[in-house]
Length: 210
Ligand code: GTP
Ligand code: MG
Image 1: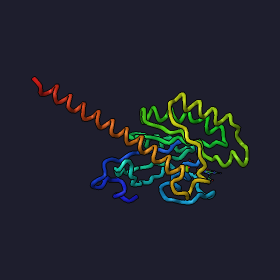
Image 2: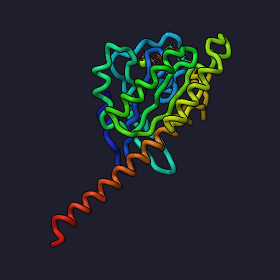
Image 3: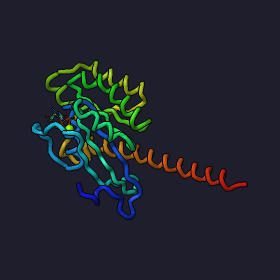
């Protein structure tokens, strides 16, 4: 990993840590490769071992933000390793496979995990492999309806897309998705730093005011 990629450069205002979570095989690494590496879609992508990392500089509302994106392995045997990376997360993409209902059912578990280990951070629920629904009809409208209900209950946005169809397009749904989560993560960083400053002021007042 390039060390420079990890640090903030002059003029950059914030770094945002984004965590990709969800079952194995839902397409987390495919999504990240399409976004950060501008890679075309590949059926040959291998399952992530432990954790992967990409850094990308993004302009949002005229500010340059360093997006640090952590791509976790969905396989259960890596759970201890991956959970260690939840700390300090500012926001998360929770991905499931629209053609595999089990991966949606597991979203409850993943969301609980993020709440326990990262706190009340912004999350976007991502239903991937839209193309499979259309071609294979593997999943009925019921899965989408269930995902919509879950997202509404948890008050998180839901995005449906096909990494296969979107990869390689400019201004794709993938780009829009990452812009949205980085923006939400950055708002979280700003809010938290604001709160910290306030606390520091309060503490100063309390210690030095009499
Ligand atoms: P782990 O690393 O094991 O957690 O899996 P992952 O979530 O990173 O999944 P990965 O990106 O490795 O993709 C798994 C498989 O799904 C690969 O064969 C991909 O080519 C395929 N895939 C990913 N996105 C799509 C999609 O939008 N449509 C279709 N049809 N296949 C997809
Ligand atoms: Mg992966």
